[in-house]
Image 1 (cartoon, rainbow, N blue to C red):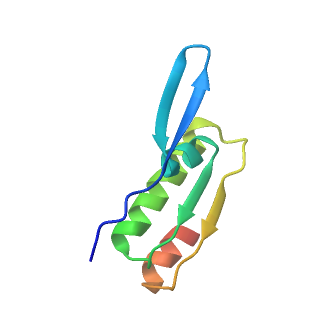
Image 2: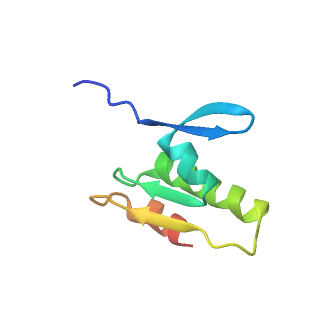
Length: 81
């Protein structure tokens, strides 16, 4: 099976150009994307992202997009909680 690499986006500003992988760029806009089966490791990453964004600005919404075939119920409940 081949490795799939995430696409990169280029952001231009007065200070020059910077490239981000798409998931990092989405996180900057407070968007978290879950696109794999849910297990303990994936849940820990999602929860860490949520905690980071909540600490950064507790007043702004966090958007979670889910495209998952399922997985561990306990890991999914940890994200939900």
